Each structure stands twice: as structure tokens, then as C-alpha cells.
Length: 299
Ligand SMILES: [Zn+2]
Image (cartoon, rainbow, N blue to C red; front, side, top):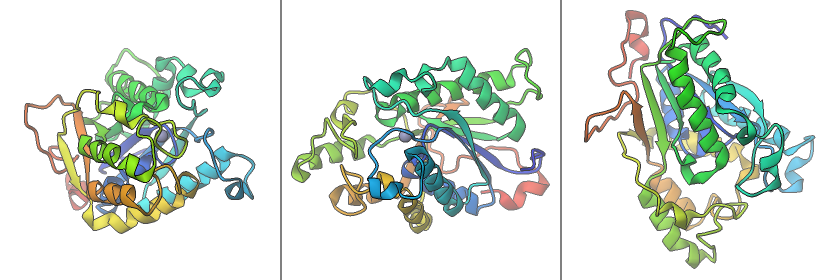
């Protein structure tokens, strides 16, 4: 890895688990990678918790090992430059014993996780940073934890009084990936037809989709048209085979159709700079300064 990225377009993506990069924003990542943007993924955990078919664990020592290899497969297909693991443990859904594990992501002080993210911000100097939204998409505690740590890191990285072994650096933009409300509405409607409970959705039955409709709407400031990279995203999705095949995550069926339909466009809220009302960006790098050397990678 070359930390001297002064002449490149760089995106830093900070997420909690293997598969978060593909299921929510795989099209966007594939698109920008193909346009020459250097994309680095910070992944806080290795997805240690969850129900994985024992058949899929053959040749692996743990669920985490399997999921790390799935992420590396997806990262290669999407075209990411590198994946950086923060080394925390998947915290599982609220109320499960995994929350209490001393290395669980949710058990760490925000500033401690943020310090690790600051390291990558200052080292890689991304113009654009992307993370989960404030409710972590579907209220997964780890998604919320990495959101908070990334927001904190965004402040600290630029602060000269916050010292680590690297110089302060301020990225130009911060985005949150958001799940379209329309998708949730349709999935809640379709769930009973598929004999699924919208309050216990997902492979592990631990996603209360219906409750998400009661949450406030996050404004959508950027819509990224992902039609041209649909196939790439499908290939990356196939890498995460331990997380497919049930509870609405199947590659086939009406919910898969919905995911495909809504996946034509991926949506983001811009947290920094705070936008004027009615912002409609089509490019996360819109307004980013481009030097001569980077103009070919410009989008
Ligand atoms: Zn996740």
C-alpha cells in the first residue's frame, strides 16, 4: 500500500461486517473502482456471529475465518484496493450474550474505535468517507457503533490538537449509506406472503423490518446509478454465500427481486458538508478538487 495518495481520488469506507460493503453499497463501490478511485475498506469485525451452514465451514476454523475469506473475494470482484480489519468481535443483535464479549465492537469506547479510524483517515487521505447511517440501516448495534466511531474520527482527524503519529487531515465529504424506505415498505408488505414475519426478518430472524418504518426518514442527498455494474455486484454478492439462502436474503424470489429493483440506485445522505435543502447529487465526488494527475480518474 502506498500511503502517498496526494494525486489520487480516494474513498474510505468504514463498516462493521463482511457483506455490509456489498449488500448496501456494492454497486457504488464497483462503479467508483472502475472509474479509477482507490477504495479502502475499514471493516471493524470479521462477522464472528451468525448462523452459518456447517457445510460452509469445512476448511475453515471459524465463522470469522469463512466470512473474512468471503469479504476478500467480494473486495477483489468489486475492485477495492485494500481491506483493513480493526480486529473487534461481531456484537450480534441486541440482547444476545455476544454483546457482552470483552472484544465486542459495542463494548468498546467510541473514542478508542475512532482512534483506529483516524489512523486510516490520516494515512490514506480520502476525499470521501462513507459509513452506515445513524440507525445502522436496520438497527444493528455494530452498524451504529461504526457509524459513531467514523463520525467522531471525521472530527478528530482534522483536529491539530488530536495527536497520533500522522499529520491532521480533513476529508472533503462524509456520507451515510441509507436504506430506501420504499424498499422496507414493500418488504414488510411482501413478508407475510412469503411466510416471513416482518418483525423477525433476515437470515437469523433478528431484523425487525416493521419497526424501521417508525424511524425518521433520512434525507437522500445522493443517488448513484448502479445499473452498469449490476452484474459485478451480483458476483460480489455470491461471494457471501454463508449469508445468503434464507430469511429474505435468498438470491431468488420476490424479496430478491425487490433488492435488485431498488439496487439499481444506491442512496446516501450527505453529513458533511451539511447540504442545502433539496440537494440531489449523482456523484459522491461532486465538487471534490481534482488535480491534473487525477483528472483521468475523475467521475
Ligand atoms: Zn452488517
